[in-house]
Amino acid sequence: MKRLEEALEQVSKAIEVVRFFKCDSAAALLEMAELELRMKVHDISEAELSAFCHELENRVHTSGRGQVIPLRPKYERLARRKST
Image (tube, rainbow, N blue to C red):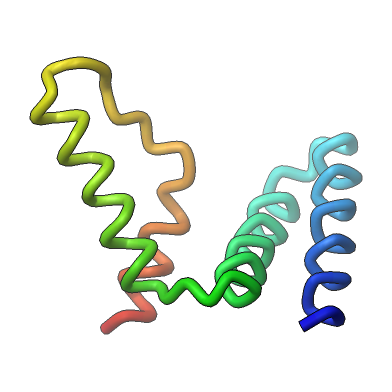
C-alpha cells in the first residue's frame, strides 16, 4: 500500500504543475486518476462513492437549505459507467 500512497503523492504534485500551466484537460485526467487512487487506498468502492454523493444530494434537497453544485460531474459519470 505504501507504493500506492507514494504514487498518489506524485499524481497530486503533477496536478499542481499542470494547473499552473493551465492544462485543463491534463488536470482533469490526473484528478480522475487521483480519485481512483484515493478510493483504492481507503478501500472505497465506486458504488459506495456514488451512494454517498446521492445521499449528500438528497440531504441538501430535503433540508431546503443550500444548493448542490456539481464540482466533479466527470467522476459521477465515470462511476456510473464502471458500475454497469
